[in-house]
Amino acid sequence: MDQKSLQDPDNTQVSWERLRDLPLDHFSDLRVLVLGDFMLDEYIWGRVERISPEAPVAVVDVERETRTLGGAGNVANNLVALGAQVEVLALVGEDTPAALLREELRRLGIASAGLFADPQRRTTRKTRVFANQQQVVRIDRETRIPGTAAFVDWALDRLETLLPAQHALVLSDYGKGVLTPALLPEAIRRARARNLPVVVDPKGTDYSPYTGATVITPNLKEMELVCGRPLTSQAELVRQGRELRQHLDLQALLVTQGAAGMTLILEDGDLRIPARTPREVFDVSGAGDTVVAVLALGLAQWGNVAVAAALANLAAGVVVTKKGTAPILRSEMERELRGHVHLEEKIVTLKELGFLIPHLKTQGKKVVFTNGCFDLLHAGHIKFLEDSRRQGDVLVVALDADASVARVKGEGRPVIGEEQRLRILAALEVVDYVALFDSAQLPEILRNLQPDILTKGSNYPEAAVAGREIVQAYGGQVRLLPVTEPVSVSGLINRIRGEE
Image 1 (cartoon, rainbow, N blue to C red):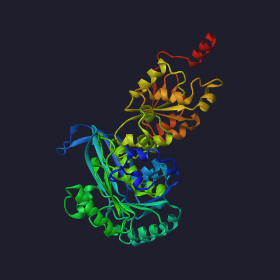
Image 2 (image 1 turned 180 degrees about the vertical axis):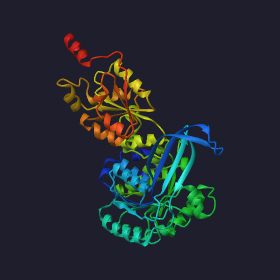
Image 3 (image 1 turned 180 degrees about the horizontal axis):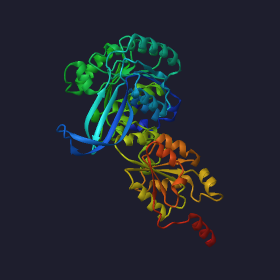
Image 4 (image 1 turned 45 degrees about the vertical axis):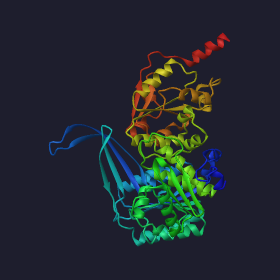
């Protein structure tokens, strides 16, 4: 697909209909190297009921703490959520936040060998304190000086080793000292020498170190800072963008403009990429990271910056509707391209839950998890699910796959196949997400997802609840919910068979 084939007849805007058939499943074959400023984002959740006697400030009683990857780490998070294989190069301290950052990378399946530990630095950590669901303060702990010569030498050696296996390089610059004057231009040169696309999320007012990259992605405010004045019209933005693209010898310059979409500046013209539909915007934080991730994958897959930019714009339009920093899932992009189906938005994979649940927790949501066969759904099931949902803010149901049900329940089960059972559960208002699983996977699922609460019916003794010890070990709770009107599905099946 060439650039012109994406455009409407006036050659100024993207035609969304021409993107619908793009296959996204090949993202799983791509490897992307992310080089930049990795951070640890921490969230402290509590409540305020009194004022400190020491000073006129609120006292926050802490109830729980959550964490996720920030900065360049959020780019990596987006790439993995889209199915890509990711390598990283970054700079951290020798401290507890660095250990937690490594743990988060391992959770995503990313090797932490790409983190260089400098005992003289502090790992960049941003701690947000929320009281009664309102953010009251943010605490930043970081070292902003450029990385040492030892780090640069190490990073260049790692680059030489890693680049041959990569399909794209992302440079995520948050100005914390990783992308030094000695490292940044050399990383671009080496990647471009291998014909790898280099996508840059820029920082500051001097973009000359990014010379030779494939594309850089400033937002409108950042473009105005670089230009030193407001850009009050689209024509002025395009004119300044053309000058900057040519000056930096870029293949393209992509300016993100929020609700107005994007403008792509190319050597042979410019392309207007409007937002697809009006949306309710909850949070723009992290949208730039999503743009960079999708842009890199699009360039690696199709080699066409117009296609990649159009997909990136679509992805950004999805993530801004989420509260807090959140990655874009490949299934979300596919639904956006092909059209929305409400029930299918609730039906997710276990891998997708690995991204959804941490994001929900960073919003302060209490996640409830339950599992079962739910074959021949009846009133007892409904009441149990309603009671489970009341225990927290979000209910996730793990549904036994057909093979798992057959092993647990015996011959002739399930009566209703897994695809129908998934859709039936997704149709229930009290169910937020439902995913297929095998009962043998439950311990691993609980360790990876770490829901706040695991529910089971009171007809099970607590000691017999599968996964109980795992949940309690990480600080979660197991709650047995009353079963007042037990219904035997096996009995129902026997009655049905008798009537037949």
